[in-house]
Length: 365
Ligand code: MRU
Image 1 (spheres, rainbow, N blue to C red):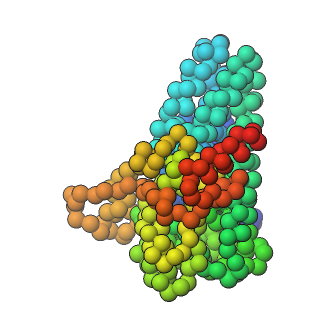
Image 2: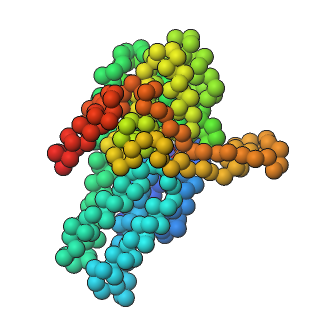
Image 3: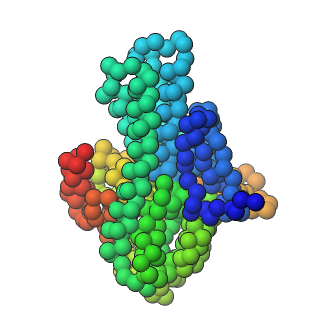
């Protein structure tokens, strides 16, 4: 019998080109069931993103890139499509559809725009060649994600020392990316280098990404991880057990305000009280220079049942109670000690440092 793979040996998102499918680990079933699902239609891809079967800003971007490639492949085979204009008409429809699955993580529109750019730069080429270029671009987006996470890990590791206590919120781990994660990348690299970190993982209500995913992947990799409820971070910080906070992000505005999983801003406020630095681990694909401040970030609201009954054996709230369920919150830039990107660490004032990072990126590409 084939040995069950460790979760860390599995791809969060993989293209199964031969079967015109995207294969993902169904993250709603983790940690007790490791189920791979094949997404073949655009509806299946949309649903998997909306339902958080695949989640985390970079992983959503990679899924969308593969999704638009599969859409292009199908459109090109459609006998009623002859011209570039006809091809693009349908492709843009597919793009807009996928883009509507989740609003806050900018990586979704970033990946889709990048794919559209490939079409526009090669508009004069035969459609089958454009499809091949889209394939290559989607694969590049995925490979880039791995390189970016590794670079963030190195910069992040330079900010801490062996034996440190680190706290994280939600899952900005390997399961949210193609490898290493963003907030977890310094943890994994440190682990490889004998840093012996003590990690605290917030459980992350209401969808429990911290309990089900972060605690699981860190434990599976042999790291020292302690699970705490979201309302316990002040206690572990006051006890002196936390030296730094590393979290991911879904959209960073030009002034450094950062949207990440609901509860992140509370962690940042508590950390400020105890003089603990909060670092946002941000691939430049998550930085949105077109959004001036956090006030302009669209925060996704999700259904009430995620709070009232999901994960409980029986409903835990009165029928008909009003529920507010924002999936993200904005951490104000003055609570952030540094924004760690693949091009270096941005420090306040972020308006200037993020511009510098952006210029570095533009010059390199
Ligand atoms: O709703 P989710 O699970 O997609 O939220 C994920 C987060 O908030 C992550 O911290 C963020 O996407 C960064 S993942 C590297």
